[in-house]
Image 1 (cartoon, protein in one colour):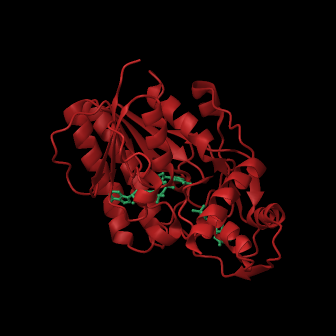
Image 2: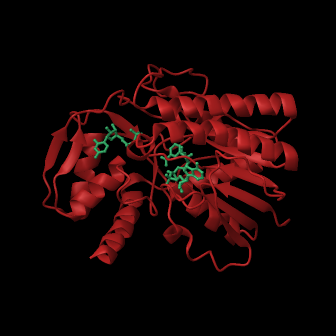
Length: 317
Ligand code: NAD
Ligand code: UDP
């Protein structure tokens, strides 16, 4: 096997830290670029002493001016949780847009293949269900979620044009809600919020009446598919990656209550603006080209995430 030199932007975040580990374990050289805005060196600390691992504390929205060559670039840098991406929406836009230009220029210069972490948010509050890659989406471009949704949409366009005009090899994955260990315990996403609340015996916060749906994919399944996409010779996407098993937020809360055996009650809060009502990926394309079938069901994935968050909370005490 050829040892590859792999740049992972956002490598100190949830998905990025697992991907760094996976690429390192596969024998490659990994350069993790991250500005630590939502990630943490805690997630990569066991890799920092490895000779094949380098950490660059850098903002991807600024031009990358180091003279380094790469075989592959995974572009994951961007806050993914609504709480974090809405904190500094202008920075979120710059990260997606200027970050896409930085990565494209780097790929153009070095000949590296690119994986772009796009999102189910490109479909917005969908009117087609489940969502296929051919769906153009129903996105509000003038609201609280727009900095993320539109940033990711224009990023796809930037990669599309660099592929057409400059021959950059681009692989685009539209990632649906993914969860697991190394999620930031206070990132505000539904799975971390509900588990942390359950473990602290606090009320579980449901936004709206909890009838909205999501489809949750465990991190190892998602990364199996992401690496297959990067390594595929002919298929480049855009492709939906996620687990099509759909659940309402209220049923998710009940499941977490039972798995944690908590005495917590459920409390309903205001539904945020433009919160998508339904979401489920159609993964036929990923099945056909990447032989992708998620293996970890929600009970197993949640149990692993609960153990991780339990340990994290114990450290805090
Ligand atoms: P995360 O917030 O845990 O990780 C993002 C990482 O990017 C963090 O380490 C953060 O510090 C870093 N970062 C942010 N802005 C940066 C910048 N300007 N320069 C350098 N680094 C920067 O989120 P995640 O869940 O690991 O998501 C990773 C990628 O996958 C994101 O691009 C996200 O949009 C995409 N995605 C994730 C999900 C999901 O459910 N986890 C769903 C769809 C898409
Ligand atoms: N949500 C909730 N309680 C929480 C956090 C989120 O009910 O404490 C809801 C949120 O309104 C959304 C769903 O759970 O309908 C998923 O939210 P998350 O922020 O995890 O991801 P996204 O909305 O980006 O899919």
